[in-house]
Image 1 (spheres, helix red, strand yellow):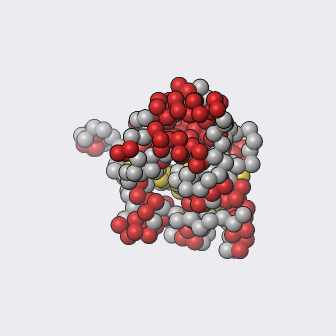
Image 2 (cartoon, one colour):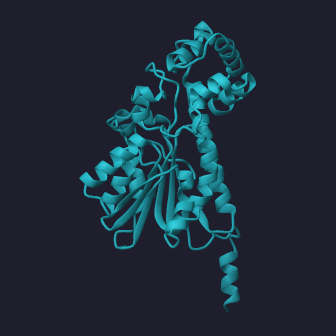
Image 3 (cartoon, rainbow, N blue to C red):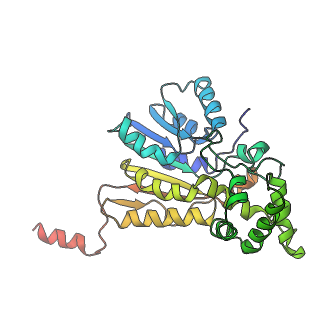
Length: 325
């Protein structure tokens, strides 16, 4: 299966922020937590010719395509692609490269266009396909969306749709699913889409957003444990930053952004010196939105490990002057 072309969201901004002021450095290390089609990875390797880039992905299609392109683009020895969920990356580095620290790390949390455009993966209701949604599609220990839809209790399904999709009709939809699966299993994307569509009042069925969008998002998040993984990995990634190293995270919905915002805030208030690079998230430019409308909900937050924490006491510098007299 060929890997579909993917637009790397906020690519110019990420590369500029992670590589600035490092032109004269020789020992430069970057990491990309979501390799996908390699957009951020290859751009980082291109931007700094002496850098090493460590990337991870768990999707078999992305890995196969990535290994091929690393060789074709001449990045052997500089781009290191590993088969894993990025949750495992901090432990992988501490075990295999204990002294390695990074100048820049990027995590683009958006689902690759490949997943939406490759119908058989079951991420999109635009195609009639098995309800799968696993990023790690060859891992049989991971529950599919069909497993969840057909086996979880009605109340738990409603909670998933509400918590991860912010779906206001979650109880009605879960009740309808429970009724339908008593007759026959719900196995395909179109079966589920039609069922959800029928739960919506007629006046809301043809709005700007397809009625199934929120529930499909919720299922994808649940299948891949996306929010749990994000909460666990951010502290580990922060610990891998060099002094002046930066962590850039791109989110695509409010649930992710809230987690990143709060974890960055906790880091700044902790004992290790970190500072927010940007207090307000960076969003795609008008030109980027014209090229890639799917990036419309993207938000970029960056945090930097610094030499020392800024004093909250605005008179601290004068106190130090007095002490030195």
